[in-house]
Image (cartoon, rainbow, N blue to C red; front, side):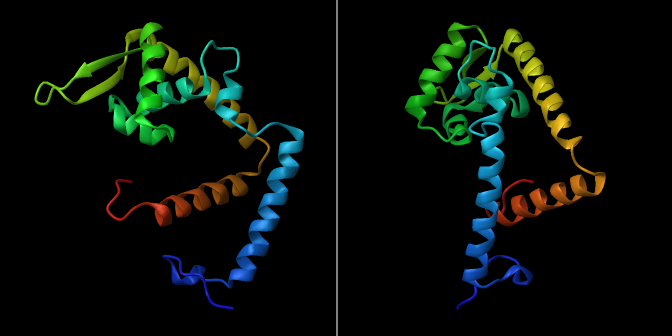
Length: 165
């Protein structure tokens, strides 16, 4: 068997070994999913809100990173710009966001949270933080550190060259 090429030479493993590990991970995730739905834990945390999962994710990205172009918001949501236009239209009707045209290039439209949207973001963020904390409470501190380290390594190794941290 040939080695799989990854960014870190220390992580090269046989393809068959990686398939076995992927199989173990898949089965463990499925076992978790049998206990509770994993489809969209963020949206599930906020199920009582009158917002769709894409609307919730849009509010979260805008709250985390500030105003975004329609194209960047589409990329973050994994949607087309056409789909994001509908999402933003509904959030705008709910007075949670507003569109702002660039002064230097009127073709560029940024979406930003309104005051009401900022309040909604803070409430969403607090709910999610509480939910994440309850899951982390199930782990030993050393397991949390291991999890954080693994996530950081995955982020670093999958980030495009020159991407901001």
